[in-house]
Image (cartoon, rainbow, N blue to C red; front, side, top):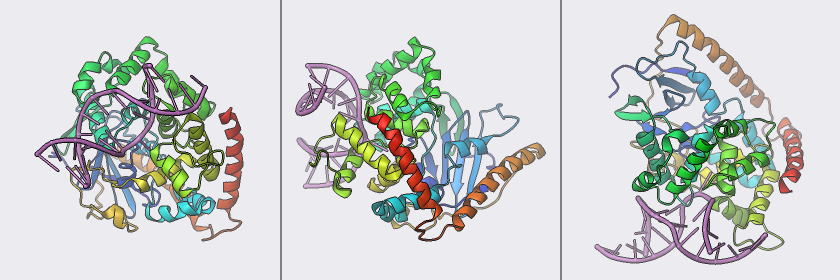
Length: 399
DNA sequence: CAATTACCTCTGTA
DNA sequence: ATACAGAGGTAAT
């Protein structure tokens, strides 16, 4: 039980810009809990709390005991984590113009955007993801935190732990096997050992975020780790290293390439996912969708997941909501009370909030001005520009 | 070098 | 009940 009242703050946010109940259950991140419409996860030394209604995203944070910060930067953390400075509705519009097949699914699956995760957690999570399902991946990630992470805080009776760094997981293979990791236990131990052997590696990993590092370079960098193949490398490039154009080719992508998009390799229907076919399919979608192709891919991926709940929600008031899909994302009766603590925090947050609000409202305003079905509208122009840019990128990638 | 195959565990399904 | 396939693949052969 929560001892004290939650100090919610809020930002105005259209569910079509972000639908947390989908984004946090579509196989990007695996640690979010959801109880009675409130989402929680440890992130940057605190437990972040979120809920959403038709007009607002509500956020709060619980810090470790005696570690309340001078300035609560949770809004910045949330903005960064959800990549909120990228206007998603403009992208949906663009993808719908470039790809009629996308448009159909997008109508139902709005608000699905790419997270900007922590690279280390992203790497380890997706080493766990190989030949696995979302439910067990979630269980494994929780297990890592509970057994090797640091306790941050308790919320709704659940202890939240930080995601353990590589130094915490040295020589862990046999323990991880007992925890049910199977053959992935060895991959994790070996990868952690590499980080221990070369102390510069951790910084190198985070440096892959730089715009100066191409997606190809980041991809190659990631392949050095045991348990990381092309698909996992691409997931990390896309989900935490800012390589937004990368489309990881998994079984789902392979299926809709051949089934829905008439994709052919050297004139024939591809049957197995060889290295060449992998690169070719990735190129196919990157060329189709442009410089945020990986984001578009995640929309189709989410639409293709049979059950977006993945059986991991503890208790949900919105069961089947995803399938029925209305324009609202969460239907629970959320009280819109906003409790504040100190004068300073109020000012601090209002300032930060104001900046974000202005940004968001500016974006929304831009969106309003775009015609419903533009033929020479901004979206299309941008789409072409992106496409061109992308194909020039791509040449380097194929080499 | 390309193409198969083994690999842990858990869950849904017949 | 008791198998058995399949899950956001990768390493080994």
